[in-house]
Image 1: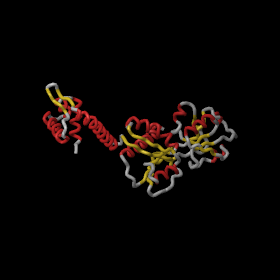
Image 2: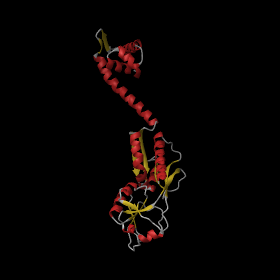
Image 3: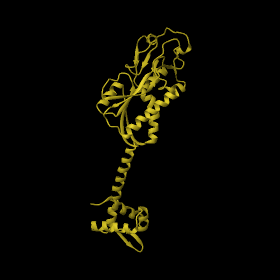
Length: 296
């Protein structure tokens, strides 16, 4: 059986066309390289290189071997490189879940950094509501998921880690009638990203006439809120860019009970082994949430 070291010697010698230069690149002596080539030629029963005063040249058998050996060594090197990258969490693939609000809050910054730090990692992100993500986790179809701690079924095998408290606010378009001061009897549409979100204070329920419109896609909900007089129950963390751009505003609620925040949690299976890639990505979400809370 051919060994990879001998094949590598052949490929380097064929590229350098000099025993001295090839031995120097391989960090071995010329005699070691010469003996290795002679041993391989004896094993194969063919001459791979011609050597005379003008230098070294490949025989037809050598040309045929070098082409296939170079391809094989490139594949071996690629396997080794990807194995090492996987061990460091810098390559491979991962499938995880995000609820719509956490995805809007955490994914842009975390993924931008991951694309820079680990460009060879394939990320398969499933964005669904918490109940759907819970079922995928139990079925072993995702590594973990991040959601607000609402409507997540209790299960002994699921570990919940709290990432932090997300402030919940009323978001309206800049120029909304309620921003002009005074009290209006007008009933405004209410937007939420999920029917399972925490209950609202009574004054907000009265303001929308008890009717709730659910738009799970936060990008679409943001566009609807910006184009209408709807009151959107969301988080300033999720719409910070729109607020800075003067498109959306947080509705002040002086004199009324404030909206409570909601816990952001990361859920995974208790007995499932976690790869370095999974641990690295989960830590990135922890760091991002911590940075948002400190900046608030």
